[in-house]
Every structure is written in C-alpha cells, then in structure tokens.
Image 1 (cartoon, rainbow, N blue to C red):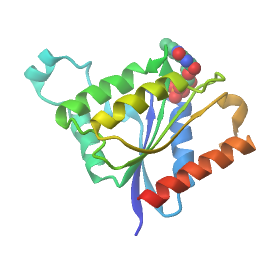
Image 2 (tube, rainbow, N blue to C red):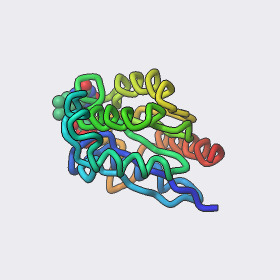
Image 3 (tube, protein in one colour):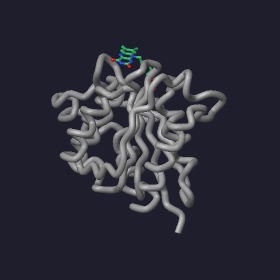
Image 4 (cartoon, rainbow, N blue to C red):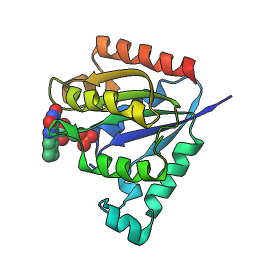
Amino acid sequence: MTKNIVTIGGSSSKNSINKRLAEYAGRLLKNATLTKVDLNDYGMPLFSVDLEQEIGFPKGALELNELIENADGFIISLAEHNGAYSAAFKNTFDWLSRINGKVWRNKPMLLLSTSPGTRGGQSVLNIALVRFPFNGGNIVGSMPFPSFNENFKDGKIVNTDLKTNLQILVDELDKSL
Ligand SMILES: Cc1cc2nc3c(=O)[nH]c(=O)nc-3n(C[C@H](O)[C@H](O)[C@H](O)COP(=O)(O)O)c2cc1C
C-alpha cells in the first residue's frame, strides 16, 4: 500500500535547502506519496502561554497537526541557525507540542540537516536527536548533509558517498513503514 510521507524543511526560507533535501530524500522512497510542508504555508504567531490562553491554537498549527496525524512517517531536514533550530521551526514545534506533546506520534522518521558549511547542521541535528524522542520521535536514521552547494546540484546529489549513505537511510525508513 502506498504510504503517506510528510516532508518538512525546518526553515522559513523561500528557497530552503533543507526543504529541497527532505523532498529529494522523499523521492528516493519506493512506494510513497509525499505531503510537502513549507512552514510558510502554516504561519503562526510567536508562541506565548498568554497568547495561547487568549486565542487557543492558531489555524496553521491545527492544520499541521492534522497532517502529522494522517502521516505514515516523516522526512525532516533542519536548518541550523546559530547552532540550533531556526526560529520558524522552534515556534512551530512549540505550538504543536501544546496540541499533543507526542508531536511525532512514534511514527518512523528520517532526520536530516544541511547547511552550506562543512558540518551540515550537525549541531541542530544533535539537539533534535536528543529532544525528539521525548516528543514521540521514532528516528530510524539521521544524517547531516555537508556543503550543500557543492554536493547538491541541479536538483541532485553529486557526491557519490553522500548519495549512497542517504539511499541506505531511505531504505531503512522504507522498511520501517
Ligand atoms: C541567523 C542565521 C544563523 C545561521 N547559523 C548557522 C549555523 O550555526 N551553522 C550553519 O551551518 N549555518 C548557519 N547559517 C547558515 C544556514 O545554514 C543557511 O542560511 C541555510 O541556507 C539555512 O537553511 P535553509 O536554506 O533551509 O533555510 C545561519 C544563517 C542564518 C540566517
């Protein structure tokens, strides 16, 4: 049966390299339809407990929560801002965690990060690897993707080792769906 995989670029950049990487990885899956999340389409105000009391949950958070509820698995690629989540991702994550603390519902997840630098977002990846399991994260594979602009060209991975490693992780996700 075809699986529904939600891909998320953990960024609000219009041309997010993380969104591109997550969607590329999704296309390597054998039998999946992709629900591609651009955080810009789920705009939500800056979280505060006071605002939550005042307005409840914003529409974008409820819609995204519904997508997560209906997903069979996730491919998430996190942007790194000053060694941590982008503000857009963290804000989204905070709102989602108020709707359901088990944000990721224990569904299989491939967790990636990329940046133009040689560490490929390793710091934000480490943060999520430690944190997501407390929020229902079932991470079946993870990988930082370094030097995006050198290793990903014309919509494809041009570095053979990175391509092979990503395919191995995608196959792991496939098996766990
Ligand atoms: C405020 C800010 C902080 C950043 N901090 C980091 C960083 O700590 N490590 C890193 O590798 N890249 C950093 N970058 C560069 C991002 O990795 C780069 O902008 C990348 O394109 C972000 O991913 P995105 O295109 O998916 O938004 C930073 C960029 C911004 C705007």
